[in-house]
Image 1 (cartoon, rainbow over the protein chains, first blue to last red):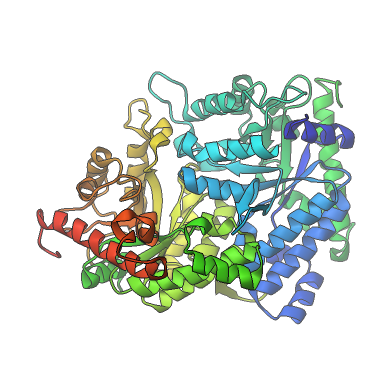
Image 2: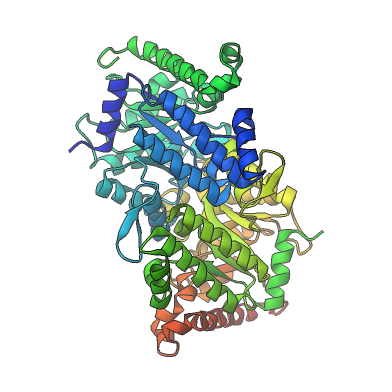
Length: 319
Length: 319
């Protein structure tokens, strides 16, 4: 049976795209016509924002589902609006799945064993009902934080096995201060992010699919290409989730070290650079706010071209 | 003005308790009469479980609000049930606050700057509406994971300042595998948890209240008393959130090193040991499942006595 990494790769090859669209809505950047419509209908409330998010995301998904393999909703932006936000989050996931997209929840969850299990049930497993069980968010992948060690990761790995899902574990994150802890040199060992890489490589070893990639991979920021090179060698069969392209400053050249010589091995996320492309001067002259979704499609096409051209120079196997 | 640590300490002294009740409901351990009632009303659904949680928590809160300073709902157990779970979570927080309890959300949230900000808005800050802003969960404290460095923590610290709130940052967690990363020795520096402690101590330095304690403190597991002793010295003015007492194996003697010589400096959490006391053979002979809440009250009284007796031996200032 194909594992979830295989299904991701199938979609990457079919769509000729390793781009992931980050669905990270922010109310003040959503076009005014959606904001006003939701305010008129639901008042100036948490619910109005949540409904605006759900509506906005559907427009985006309609324009990108055929040109990217996956979307990555960041749960923080929905959690900000309480249960109405989480309802919009669930709706977004279900809609994306209905359009054939894979869904990566960015949640960076972590806790001790029994609690990590509850998180895993929510995101990729099944919640215990009064009788029986039921999937809840039912994403394909979720991101996990490794600070608590294997206890906090194991429940997710179990659900990867049970339900054919995947996880991306924070390793070298894209933000400026990521080195405060992650770059520290451990006595008689490597750096913290290298230690975490070794763990990810071991944890993923038994879950390798037909293309040779595991369901357990790392998060490696596009903003750290030198570290990505080291990490690519340390985790040869891991799929990398690479945030930080575009708005955060990462370029196609920067993400190149995250790929293997087969042209596979990484998906590259862009959030604001895609979903709020209509606000970027590169697109705002061409697309009106009413056509924000078309601007997003154009931005995805440009991102695909940018990354694929860079990958092609090295390897033409899949590109 | 009193900071949130002062308000916590006022309540600790008034109630003569440094115990925190962890509101971590699990559907199969909730008394059958509540489960059946909710199933009859809402079917065998996610909502039925969420309603059972809200109901169960109210019973518990009614019996403990006058004998503990705070409750700590673990959001994972609510998130497991999607938006209905989060609705029960919000209801629980609001009810606890209406009874004069302080609320510590255990969420271990973490992300890069702008995303961490969204989490902080949800838990201790204010969410941005179409016009203006509104508090959402509006807890007094939230737990935070430090793996991304200051970028991921700063937005929470800002909200601590803006809204008089507090955070507990994971330092040495109570689980078995916490040492895999946290106990590593950094070259020419201390262990990882010591480095994190130094950061917490620095970050909290400007937010010290009338009792001499900061709004920024660490999470230190009751299961690691030797490490707690070291950490107490490294963070003299931090309030410790100490999980792992009771069900996880930590005793009153184990938590003692988390306190300062003034008898202050720590709150000790117990979850299953309190809320599911009626299932423990120590209480099940005395309390029927219908009186599960009374069993919880008894368990809190026992916990208070256990810890206060141990603290009294050292210091009678407040005990």
